[in-house]
Length: 361
Ligand SMILES: [Ca+2]
Ligand SMILES: [Ca+2]
Image (cartoon, rainbow, N blue to C red; front, side, top):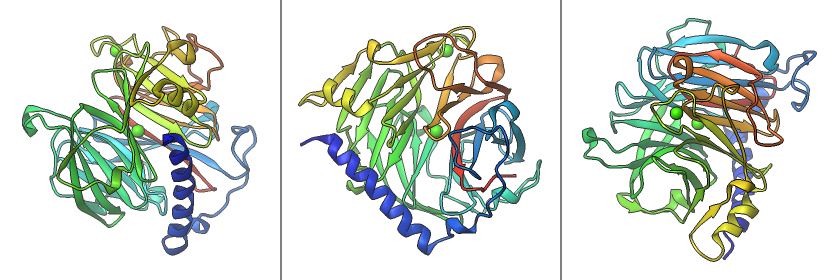
């Protein structure tokens, strides 16, 4: 059975389900179109805007940036009243942000995010129980949020996925799976989940993730070693463009040795590497790697990418105490300077949203 034909089908299923959701929940048409601004990123359709949402694990601040034009980034900050946040994701059918709070060990929702003024301190519109410790990345798919618990003495050294039914108004813990690998970044696509294996350069894939029985230990359907990648934390797969982007924090103690790995034609390369097995290696010469002094990459902990803007958005945790870095999509390996470099203390997670006129400002 070809894993990647399933992937493509599930990608179509995502679209179908997303459309059916928008028809019964807060509709996309609720966004008011705004006039096209001159000089904006040419790949966006007229009236579209690109916003990024950034968590901090050292300050009580969520950053929201309008990056429609990377040469002229505007921003606002929201006070989330905790100094240690990680995974962040947008609710795609409304105007809410989901964020993992590592201080209270809960999932939080903040609604009406686009109408909040700079510096606002909103009450959460929903929060989960205190269901985990040492939480990391989150991801959203079809009304569900998955949060990662990374193994730690405080949780008996258990790596765990927590699956919530989620809306701007509620989190209901549906089930948990323990994992037999260390976890950090992840991305749900339809019913499947990609996750990085922490303290390694491995990428894991869980087929039919959401339909596994709860309270079990699950293993990846397959695992790929990304050659040249020392320690990955963040990932983003653009299904339509078939491009996988991964971060490399390298030595966690070095604020200058980070990198971004880009794999074009990912599904073909992964299928070739796996053959008929469940493990394989994607060689470095099949990847694009950007790294070096011009990049400001040290510990890039999370990444976003969408072919619509064709930029790579990075949460850099270590260099300068934390930065948001934006790179042009690289044509080849090298040491490029970012097109935007914004100091953001404690940058721990990043999420890109492309809106149909719906800017968060
Ligand atoms: Ca590093
Ligand atoms: Ca992320």
